[in-house]
Image (cartoon, rainbow, N blue to C red):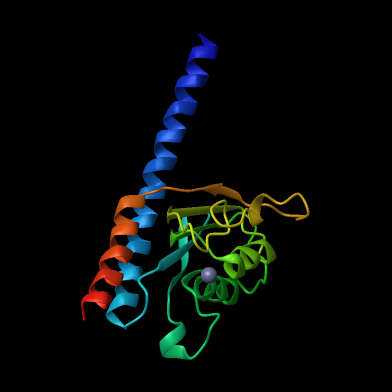
Length: 168
Ligand SMILES: [Zn+2]
């Protein structure tokens, strides 16, 4: 039956999407670990266009003396430079922590189609936790938002990092 078949297909598609989301989030987690190795808060991001990785970013404001050098901004800048376009329609940005207001704003500027994040950030998150910027009707572009992908792994990395800082 056509109806059953299409709902089966859509379940498969959702399953595949979830698997792809987790795979890219694992790459973002590796970049978060890289940030940690460089003495930065462990947050990582990747930008995917047409199923391919076009840019990576990890948090680096301290080492670069740049308050805007969050993982998402680093990835967006690299991606835009790579494709010679300040806009990235159709792109998905994966990041291990819910974006702050600045990064959420940058995602809108870049016309990123989809945001996938790991752990929520109750203190600064702008995708529904502290602010719900990306759902604002005032915006002319609103990325689709998926949160909670590998949230435990993403959050654990941050918790351990801050725990170790306190113990020093
Ligand atoms: Zn940010």
